Image 1 (cartoon, helix red, strand yellow):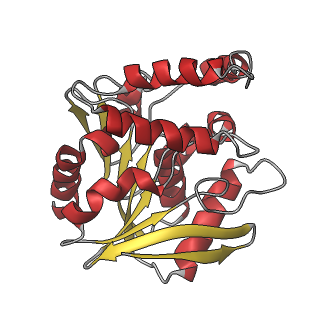
Image 2 (tube, one colour):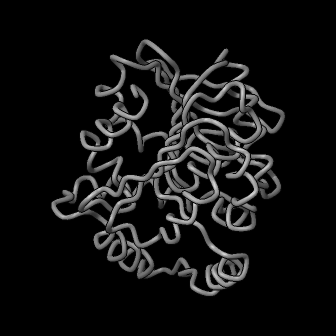
Length: 260
């Protein structure tokens, strides 16, 4: 596995790459890192060249002095692909990463062969606005007694799938705590973004994935009506961190879709 950095007009993005065969760009979810896809590496590297690229303000990529917009995330990811010589490629994104994958596919119809959009749904503008307001009223303050750590740990232990080990939960939790130190939260610009318009412009085949235990996803069925060429698979006993705790199952579904 090779790690490195690639330049964009807003700073450097960190990435890792491994494997051989057609390109597959991996886009992690908001407030996580490329660590999310390490479990896929040994499972898909025999059939694909994997590129796990961390967005602006995530992992080891550049933190910007101003809040990035959805256009910033998409543009810099395309610049990273250009800098790495990634021309034709499939995209796999989870949660916020799926939103970026859809936006890239809408912008580059001649370069994107497939999109796996995992854990992304559809909300009306009114619902998105309500969620934005709610997000800014429930933040847990950082206090001397560390109560916020206990509260967040309790939340994360309940988000795993049945049988998820505490070691996996601990890894996810630590990644999120590290991202909390970053100046901006990518959930906000993604919620402000018009997903419906981008979905209608996607020309390549799209696989919509949803874990049946992922409480963050709603309205995914509506995307089947908007995206011209889409199919949907619901993963049993899978939650919001399915690529961490179920890499074998996720890799099998992804590999079958890309092979078809």
